[in-house]
Image 1 (tube, rainbow, N blue to C red):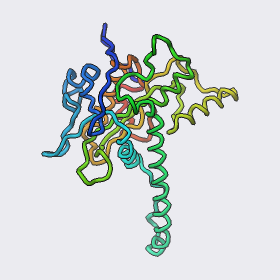
Image 2: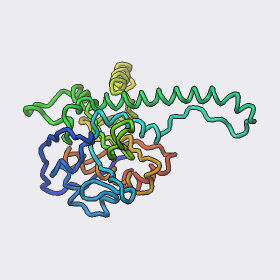
Image 3: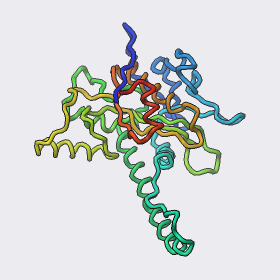
Image 4: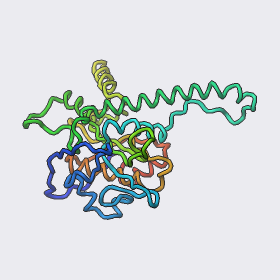
Length: 289
C-alpha cells in the first residue's frame, strides 16, 4: 500500500543534523530539533500517545518510554522484541494428545523450538546490523541518498547504500541496573529506501540484490518500478503488554513525517498480511491502499 502525505507549500527541507551518541543508547528524536518539529508542532490528537518530546508514560510513577533512533548496542533488545511480537515457535503440540504422548514429545519439541528461537534471534539481529551498518557511525535523520558534492550516484550504488542505511526507531527506556541488555524496548519500526517492485525484502540486503540480478539475467524481471527508490515502512511491532495505546498509529505517523518533511518524498510503501486484521485495519485507517 502507499500513503501520500500532504506536503506544505514552500516547506523548507532541513539539512541533515548530527546528534552525539547517547549514554542511554537510544538517541531521542527530540534531540534533532527542527527535523522533528512535527512532535512539538502537531496536536496531541495527531501524535496520539506521544507528548511533544516523543515520550509516553505507560505506568504511573515510572520512567517514561522515549522514542529514539536505535544504535548498535540497542539491536539485541530490539531483536528480542521483534521475535516476541512476530513469534518464533516452530512446533506446537495438539490439544488431543494424551498426557503420556505429551510427556514423550514435549522434551524434543522444546529442544527444537529453543533451537529455532535462537536461529530466529540470530537472523533478526544479523539482518538489523546489515541493514543499518552505514548508519552506525552517523546517527541522524538524513535521507540515505543525500547527494555528495552535487553528484548523483549510479542506480546500483544507490540501491546498495540505501540497503545498508535503514532508520530504525524504538520506543524504550534504560533497563534497571543488573538486568541484561541496554534498553527496555516496547515498540520498534523501520524506514528504508528500496525499489517499488512489490518484492518482499529479505532480512539480509545482499540476498535481495542477488535475487534481482538473477531475475534480470533470466529475463523474469518483476513488475515495473519507479526510477527512484522510495520510502518503505517495515517491521512495525509493539510489545503485547503495551498494545491498545495507539503506539503503532503514532509510529506510522512519525515515519510518514520523516519520509515527507526530512527525506523529501511524497509517498511511503509497505507490505501487510491481509490475514493480520490488526495491522491491516491500522494501515487502512491511516489512508494506505
